[in-house]
Length: 261
Image (cartoon, rainbow, N blue to C red; front, side, top):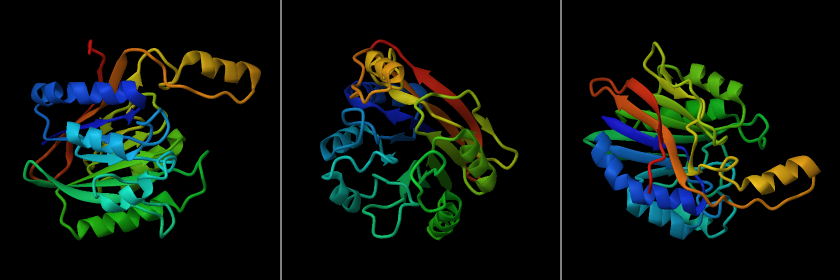
């Protein structure tokens, strides 16, 4: 089974690139499933209903998110109404939406779990204990594959959760920083890992944003409204090859595509 998991989709350039390129990418790589983090897909911060549906129709079968998913109030009931758009599972009880889902792809049951880190981020419930609970609940649905998007700032926290879940999930994939890391690897117990998937957004940018606005904020230390950069998009993520016999990760490859759109 081959899965493409895309990094954070940023604004219109990221959405357009994903929608335009997905049909060709499916054929080129023989993809059975496409997943993506979408918390910045609308205007570079947040996600609205229209863009969630657009990406789903384009072929992103399930979507994860993070701390910016709450920006557009219209998304709150939508999180309750759909099972393919997730928010981190370690938000408190009664928060709209769900933290994991189980879907069918290529004759396999694929569980997708979304978690959020706490280091340098909001003090949510413990992601380690939330992972224990979610993995136990998902296993009751007999999934063949378990994928985890850990939306976190600190590399050490991502690596810690990798070791904590080693052998219990197919892959742990970091998101949030928008900078793809070069540490994609499969552990001895068959769990794939990368610290950050990167992003799908403007290539000539600072994490998807216009460089001038970011630089001014660093240099003057004054509040500055960020805007999505207007440049050709790059797509980043990982290709996962999963063994049919046991759901372990056979290979994980960091992936980047910046061909002319």
